[in-house]
Amino acid sequence: MGVLDDFPQSYGYLLNYRVEGLPRELFALYDAGGRPGADAAGRRAFGIWAQLRLSLGDKGGHEHPEEVLRLAREAADGDIPWTFEDTRFLWEVADALSSCGHTGHAELYRIPLAAIATLGYSERRQILGDAPPWHPAHRSPGRAALRKDLERVLTEPPEHGPAGVVRSLVWDGDPIARAMAGKYAARLAHPAVLPLLKHWRKAKANRPSQPWLAKVRTLLTDDGVAVLREILSRVATHRESREPGGRVFLARHTALPLRGMLWTCEVIDAPWVSTLLGDVATNCGIGRNGTGGAAVCRNERLANAALNVLAKRGGLDTVGVLARVRARLRRPALLAKASEALDAVAVQEGLSHEQLVDRTVPAFGLGPDGVREERAGDCVVRLDVDGPVLRFVNASGRVVKSAPQSIRKDPVLADLKATLKDLKRTQAAERLRLEQTLIVERELSWQEAEQYFFDHPVTGPYTRALIWRLPDKFAGLPVRSGGGWALADTSGRSVRPGANTPVRLWHPIQESAEGVRGWRDHLLERGIRQPFKQAFPRSTCSPRPRSAPAPTPTVSRATSCATGRPRRCWSSADGAGCRSVTGTTSAAAT
Image: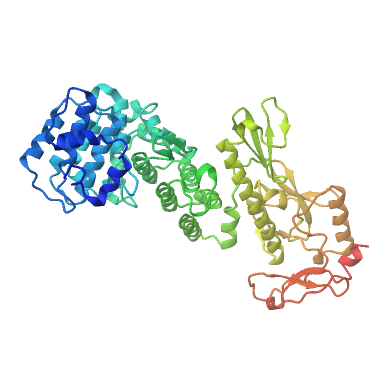
């Protein structure tokens, strides 16, 4: 029987996969006692044949015949011009034999270790890097037994400088790792920061332990904080790249120290931390190019780490960040984690459910004018809340309706398209929420109304088109006044309430027929479009009696007896009747 016949059948697919490339004629020659010639192909075939001779069958074993070991040592010590593919196959054979009971690890990996030492460090990392789930390396105890030998062949020599030091720790499997070993190499390899980088690589658990955090506090320096912030800022905008093994977001050896950096943010008391954690959680928690359903996630471990740190930080400054993250995520586990963190902050700060919702409406990066601009190639893409719609400014500065051909595959455009969909869903939810605010007669302080309603880039355009009422029965539309907001009535008179003055949405049933008519004319003259028909109801509901309980409001649709058209009103379960305003709003309509 030949060397190929003795190989374990459970891993026969390795031989079948490379059946075209295996020098079977030379194997037959060596099986018959032949020796390799001086040619490179013959010597390489002899080395592979010697590696295959180490097979003891499907059941494995520990003792190899002395002749087999002599041939393996001869191949390992010989001057064989190994190729990348040869070396990868040698490691696959050794991993397969180790996985099926061959326990002589030093002999199994003698030739593979000698072969990989002839390659460059980048090729070594490709061979020993992340393997697919079916790969025998996942079931091989040999690599764990030879951990020190693997570290030796993967550690670059001192003459490679700071870049070599960093590459030995984070490898070079993606653009983030290459930036760490390039732009940030000197800072990461500095004696004050290098111990911290090595400690970040130990972030292998689901959550940081107290001893791990305690050591971070002793190692953390201002230089370490600065480089951490810059690298995580890159991660927050990072996209997939095409690597030798396919499309990659972050390689495993890169993600490990990055998780350590996220954990370190727990001990950094700086205003930028929460925003940066939110950006990282969003970018890692969504799918490729910012899209994808619940099953798609770029890197769930990093997204989880960022959310865990945000939840531990707490405070009102994290509410907006968590709300923005939750609006973008689709993966159920991450959504649940973000919601739990928000609920914890609400309890911690003593907020009601309505107050928490006020603070968690995402802004989607829109400015005070309701516009967000992003550069894609030589064009500018504008996300406008008015519509909402995407507008494009081409290289010549002209606004066009459709995306120029040069940016249609740009990830920035894909991200904005996904944001546009989320914005449309949020606007619909906000219109309904504001109508519910009117139905339940919710009362706000003027400071809350300014901060969370009038100034918000998504909610603001709706709330500024609604009529608000003060306790003294003065009603008006929000208008700018000295850097803040005031209420202006139909005659132009304005009132600027105090910060703690209560305010609620105006209801036409509380107004005279003349007053309702005045507001309708005022809105029509100025072309103001309300998010719902506050001043133009087809029928008006009686306010809920003060003595009645405050149930969750429901909007029921009944049919007006006079017109046969649908009307909105309180349901009978709410304890309040509903009546058409024949003497008020109907008269005002004439």
